[in-house]
Image (tube, rainbow over all chains, first blue to last red; front, side, top):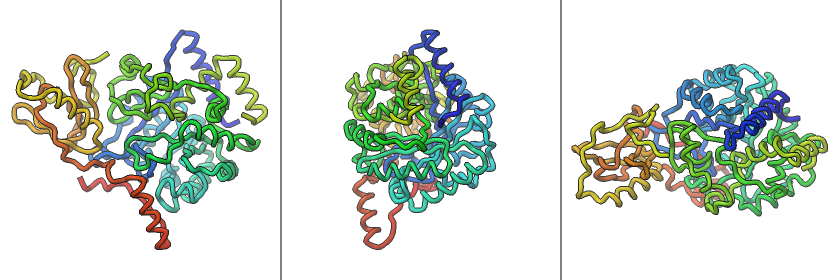
Length: 338
Length: 133
C-alpha cells in the first residue's frame, strides 16, 4: 500500500465531511509555490520564465501558513521553482508539519542530499522527487546531464534516513512504454513509497510546445503501460486516476481541487492556467467562473489536459463518495490490476 | 465578484495613487486596456508612463479590467512590495525588458542537442543568472 493509513483516513474523513455538509467545491491539495527560482531549465516547464527580480522574490513562512490555513486542505504540495532553494524551506515544512498537513515537497533532488539534515522524518513529510524516466530520457527532459544519477543518490540517502520518498513522473509524446515499465521497476527497487505519473501539460510559456500528449495518445500510452501492472509497483495516487488515464473512466476536471498560491496570490483558475490572481482563497472560490474550464466548457486550453492536479481530486471524490468508485479502488488495491 | 483597489485586502500591494486624478480624455482607453492584457501575458518587464509625470518599471503580474475601477498590479524592478495602478492613471506602456520566454523554442533546443551530439557532447540548458537585471 503506497499511502499510509493515517493519510488515507485523513483524506477520507475530510472528503466525506465536506460532502455531508453539502459543500460542493472544496480543495484537496494546496499547491504552494514559495518561489519560481530553479536550478534547472527544463524544456517542458513554463513555470520559471520571469525577470530576475521576480525570481528573487519568495513567500515568507507566515504567508505560506496563512494560505494553507485559509484553504483548509489536508494535503500541501510544494512545487516551484525548486523549493529547496528557498532559504526558509525547513521552517515552512516544520510549520506545516506542526499543523498536521501532509506535505509533498516536490524537488529535482539536486540539493536534497545536502539539505536532508534540515528536515526530520515524519509521516506528514514526503519528498516527491521529479524523475522523468530512465537516465537518458530523464537527463534529456531536464536538459542537464547527471541529474538522474544525482536524484537516485538522493533518493537512496533519504530512504536510508527514514524519510517518505515518492517519485513524480511526467510523460511526453514519444515515450516508450516498455522503458517506462522498466523505470517503474527501478524506482521501486530504490525503496520509494510510491510513484506518481501524469501526462505533461503544454504550458504556453514553455520552450517545448510540441511534445505534449493529446488525449487519445495519452490513453493509448497509459493503456499499454498499465495493461500488465506488476505486483511490486505502488502508486501514490488513486487507482481511479490511473484508470482515467487509461480511458476507462470518464471524469470531469476539478479545477478548484488543487488551488495554487504563490508570490502573485491565489492563481485563477488552476495550477496550470494563469488568468489572474486574487488575494484570498475565498475570493478565488467565489470570483472564478468555474464553468469556463474543463472539457464540457470546450475551452481549448483544457481540451487535452489530463493532468493530476485537475483530475486526481475528481478521482479521490469518486473513490469516497460512490459505491462503484470505492469498489473499483478496493478491487485494484487487492488485485493490482486497473 | 470584483474588488476595487481601494477596498482590497492586500498583503503585497500598495496603491500608486490614493487619489487619482480624472482620466486624461485624450488617451485611447480601449487601446491601453488591450496593452495591459499584452503586458500581463508578457514574461518581461514593462515601463508604465503614469499621470503626473510618474514612470514605473516592473513586471505586471495581475490585472482586472472588469471591476468597477480597473487596475493592474506590478512588482517594481527596483524591489519592494507590489504596486496597484489604476487604468485611469495609465498613459502609455512600453515593453522594455527582455521577454524571458522568448527564443527558447523546442527547435532551438533540438538544434543544440544535435550540435552537441555531433561533437560527442551533451547539450544542456541552465537557468538565467539572477545578477543580470
